[in-house]
Length: 235
Ligand SMILES: O=C[C@H](O)[C@H](O)[C@H](O)COP(=O)(O)O
Image 1: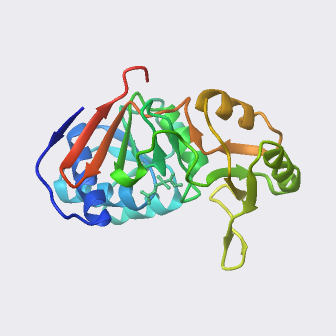
Image 2 (image 1 turned 90 degrees about the horizontal axis):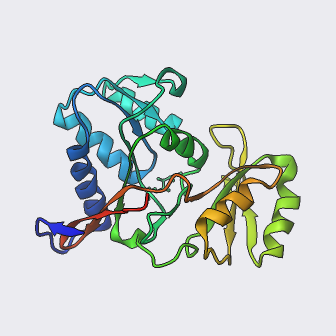
């Protein structure tokens, strides 16, 4: 781990912009890269467009990121057209010292996991508020098929969790995949790999927002002292 470039009294938005720019160091001209979703990734997309690094294009993890990339004139490919990506750049809602993450605050978790699985390297960009000793403070997003919702709420309750259907404008939010999101609080996630496998096996779960099998290889963490570069050896 190291810290570079002094930065002081920066807002959270400025820290997101800082790590968005820092991620450019991991992008090379001519590459097709994986691009995640969220406010931090938006800063990366904008920095990429401003940088004039001529990538061949991107595979995107959401309709929102696709629109932003295309608005900048960056070609977006279907995941099926690109067998392997050199790098995937995405944010996180929480990241812990092993590189495991909670993701899905923006409801894009399923496509994020798909694109991450195609990439040789996952680079997580996040402001320091996302760094945790153990996953579980942020409500865990789980994409679910609506007919399974009530049973899954009971399954989470049996683990000590409290699950709610995420609403938007008073009705269940519908993901890019046409499904719903449960947000689960009160869980203890001591073993992210085992937890991810267990929940993903419950019928009706599309994807759980624990990213342990697709964990980060590197985290660029925005702090008031600059960007901390954290490599996860075991990833
Ligand atoms: O579904 C959304 C994603 O997992 C985001 O990458 C995550 O919620 C972090 O978003 P933000 O950069 O806006 O905090």
